[in-house]
Length: 115
Image (cartoon, rainbow, N blue to C red; front, side):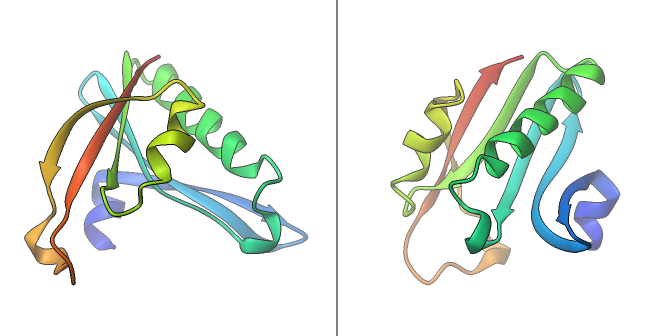
């Protein structure tokens, strides 16, 4: 977590003082990156995830980024279709971080969108 806070920041969504969603963003030269999108189960399918993604894109665009990137683990087969709805397309693969210690063989799928 300390490394994430050194490189980027979290955008939080609250409702009545309770955390209901978050997304991590990081600027990587001319590219923005987002990850760790999370929405509390009671608020899923309410559009909150879409609003957090839009906010992350706005922040990165305002910082001068021309592209937005994200990665998903290939085992979560439903995620690429979800992000395609927002204009993201698969753009490559990356090895799963060794430090994360996956229980099953896997890799990351990189997805990209022009901003």
